[in-house]
Amino acid sequence: MWGVPVDMDRERFEELVGEALDEVPVELLSLMNNVVFLVEDTPADGSDDLLGLYEGTALTDRGWDYAGTLPDRITIYRLPTLRTCESEADVIDEVAITVVHEIAHHFGIDDQRLHELGWA
Image 1 (tube, rainbow, N blue to C red):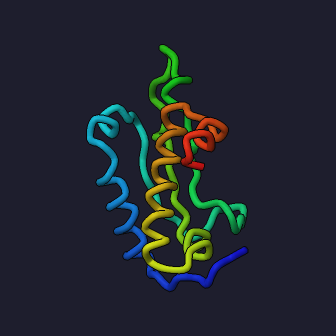
Image 2 (tube, rainbow, N blue to C red; image 1 turned 30 degrees about the horizontal axis):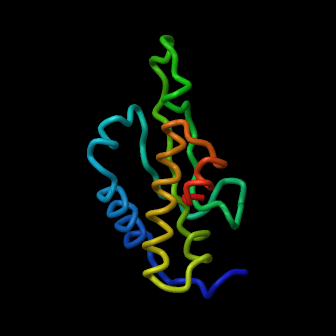
């Protein structure tokens, strides 16, 4: 069930995404290749429960012919995240989990394994 929506403007939410990225070890971030992070208010399909989305070709699926492609996209969705949280502290935690979850997809880790690891 949805909690009480948290009132947070886009600028503050983007700061939280940046702070979550700052917590990712530099060694891990340095292994990421051709990926951009975005914040959007809602998913294009209007989903209420999608907090983040990885779109691209995971590093584990890239072959010798991977070149000249647009960057992969990791999008964190503000309004669905705010609707699932009851406080700013909840938003901070949820954004951190979502950022790690989507980065894991970039490295080829699927939802089932993320669930097993507690990052689903």
